[in-house]
Length: 233
Image (cartoon, rainbow, N blue to C red; front, side):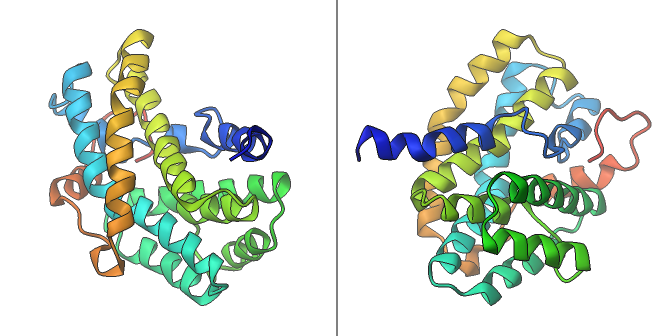
């Protein structure tokens, strides 16, 4: 691949993967705050252990897999499959806060993405979200933008995994709290785990969707009953 072609999609990916991209993900810990308040995540080591489980379970078997399946459906122009994935992402998500948080982040990302990269599929998705026919999810928005920019599927999935993890690391740094150096060391440490997750996702199919650890879901459910909260979920 030539440097020119790589540069054409590298810069948009850098923008989408930036933890400062205003999708609203910085407001959500997806259950991490529960582990922090229960003193199960207290430092860089325990946070790394939590991240590894989150990546192997929830991020791989739900969000990451949905991103890949949505990309493939877009390749085949099977929009009904994309809308079906949106429904699955919503109904399988038992914790209310996480379910609603995913929808908020998805709608915000779709709205901003449609202004930056107005793909016809993304505009249609945003219209469905606003009319209530779809719920919205960042995995599908990311796949739509990347597909429109002709970013390869494998790069798309890996970039999405990084984007989702980057927000969590930033939230962990301020929620535990950790030092900025700890955060950057976690960014470096997590790279091999994301690469392994991307390879695993390539081997999965729709039957594997939603196969995650119950403890993650239970922590997300307990979050709404915490006495003090920095995050919305």
